[in-house]
Length: 302
Image 1 (tube, rainbow, N blue to C red):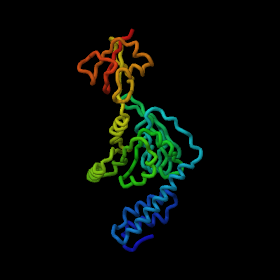
Image 2: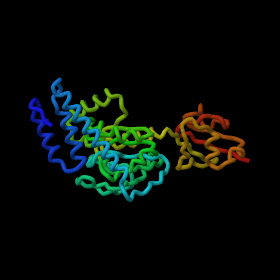
Image 3: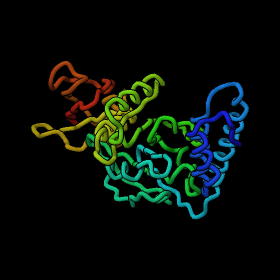
Image 4: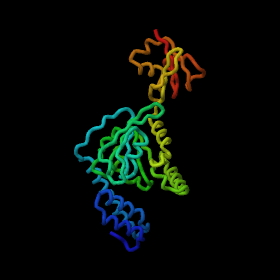
């Protein structure tokens, strides 16, 4: 497998591959071999063979995940966010930072054997966050990727991204790259990483699940991905409701009224609006008025 033209880093990675006991260890070692291989004409065939082998292992990992036994379906509740990553990438720690969940967190590989679920509340809006087992483990339930609204790709380094390509083929929702453990990087390395991500024109956020750096930005990114607005209602002479009505961007007064209960719009005789979509406070608007985030509506009914 090796080549006499390769350097020390390549042969170190090759030793890791030959000693690998698990599928994930083999995949990680193969990736390292490809990355450290010297790039010249005499190694092109060898690198191509390594990539073919890596692809086969990834397909095997996907097959293992699809035949796992005892998986229970997860009921999707509202906006669903899925966390995918390699073992020890910090997915469970991120889940704990984002939600009310208390998953088992351990440095041991493949600690997460079944999906962990938590609920994130941000700006008064709730979303379901699901932490999946490692993408290379036999416990991964691929069906969840079909229904997720947003997939967070948890990485320690951007070079790991190709490992996710077979998995991401199953995704129908949006994707966000999350680089974790930035507390291990110095300022210069962090700047280089950010520049590399920007050059790839991908949506990303840099975080540390250990120090919580970047967690507020991650929550905001999730909120933005929802493509929703929050509308508050109020009764005359009283304060607006604390819990918003959440609807898609572009919704109207009519949509809000009908979300309260079907037929409610027919009882409305006057609507006053205060907020971003209005020109002034207590502006009278019709049912077809398009709303903006954090508008406040006061309905007068028959």
